[in-house]
Length: 142
Image (cartoon, rainbow, N blue to C red):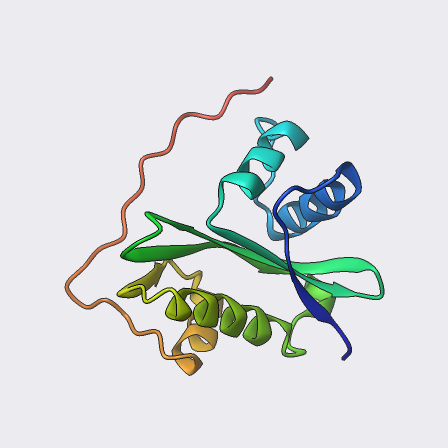
């Protein structure tokens, strides 16, 4: 499959709408989300990358970071119809290479169960003595 990986810094409305569709496809878009919030997410990320196939954004991922020591990969998703075509591996390699060149000590992430094998193939391992935790604000029905 022919696709390219691009870094997004200041997305226009067309790009934001395509990214929104990936969030929706992944089940990560709810009634508290909006395009302005999405623009801040993209701009506030250490790096935000997309995979483009025939002028359509088909995958995305981002890393957040203190910009010195460590980074976390977040919001990594590929549109359902484009999965298992190597796009996720290319995005993961792109982000890893970017962070390795900056001499970060480690990269963390929380994987959905169905994606564990992808991360393991790329050198990630389960953090044995650690437990991922989250505090979520109650979502409102605006």
